[in-house]
Image (cartoon, rainbow, N blue to C red; front, side):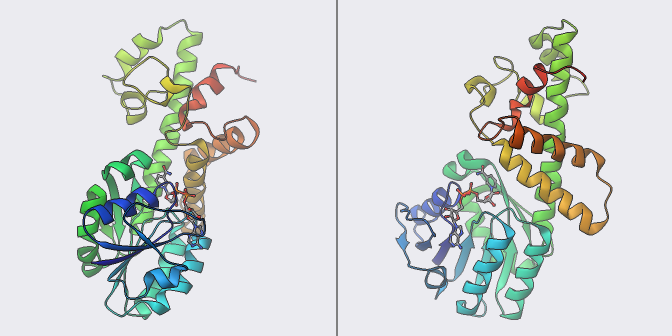
Length: 290
Ligand code: NAD
């Protein structure tokens, strides 16, 4: 298949490389001067999309996605498919899907979970929104780039699933960290805390698989001086998207709101920028109630 791939950053680069390695003819474009093994570079997004059976985009935000959509949709032929893997706001995802539909292009919003490691290993999870026909066209590419793809519903449903999942993740990480900090103050050993919680009703992915306490539980960024992993500023981005979606759909999300405020404070005024999102634990460790 001829594939256009636009946005070859930390995630897009290895994803495009995996498509080329699987034998597809991949033409890529990025604003930055990058190269990807097995991928031919084009001089614009429109050039990468022209004549492609499938176009994949992996971009930073909704504003850039809307700009790229305006550039590529007019060059794409009717019946071709566009998979957008960026994490963006639901409104932008729906707006560009409408534009694609008007041009006869099958569109899927398919944000991912699994991070840079999952992108390199081809083990991402895709959360997809779009018609059955669009999902079917995209499925063989999901198989190459990932290990699981869930068809969540119509346009925007993939983004909705992603931000709801990550709102849970942000809130759960915060409470896992504050519980460790409380346990410290109560004189409870961290390993004992892990042994109990990881097998009791407080268990969670953040405790069991990504424990924020160094030396406790399976290896995680906490054991590597909180080098990301999943950076606090990316968590903040997703939490902000959750609050934007909550505003526009009139949903009451008090915990998501507090989590957004805490990550904002952490990233913008407490040196959290560039640290893993689990570095909330050393933040809480240093604090008292006031
Ligand atoms: P990144 O900043 O490394 O890559 C984005 C790329 O898009 C950059 O190389 C940039 O030059 C390029 N770009 C920007 N504007 C462009 C344009 N108009 N035309 C062509 N290229 C353009 O970001 P990333 O970490 O690869 O993340 C990409 C998306 O995936 C984001 O939406 C992010 O939220 C999401 N995501 C990231 C992770 C992660 O762990 N990094 C995990 C899950 C989801």
